[in-house]
Length: 146
Image (cartoon, rainbow, N blue to C red; front, side):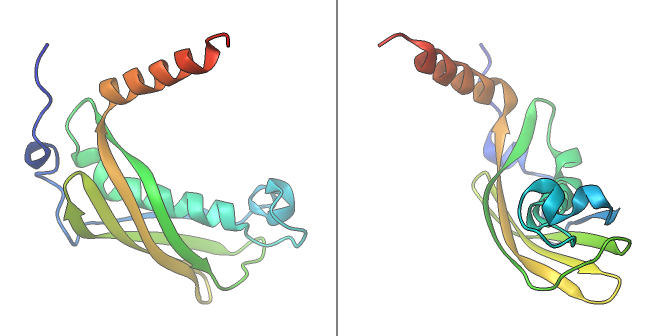
């Protein structure tokens, strides 16, 4: 068995200032009633969060070595303005810090008119193989009879 790459090697290409974006045009499938997070037909907070996470992935995922990916571990965002169906929303994520295997992003979402949300997001870089092994052990433990 080979030893896992050092953190400095895994994150060597990830640097503060890197950015990623993702965009959508708000459709009925993106609204609060559709996803079960409210009754008014505006962009649902969970959809905005998904867009923010996708922008974060766009900033760094392509720079990680084979066999590694980032997983969201913390999200601290506000959703401060409603966006109706038909408007365009862009989420932007900028790498602002690296600590060990953890990447911190400043995130923002805007529609065609204004900023609708923002805050910070953290992702941790993991070995997919080692992560999957832990998940399988947990699944096995959950399935053991009492």
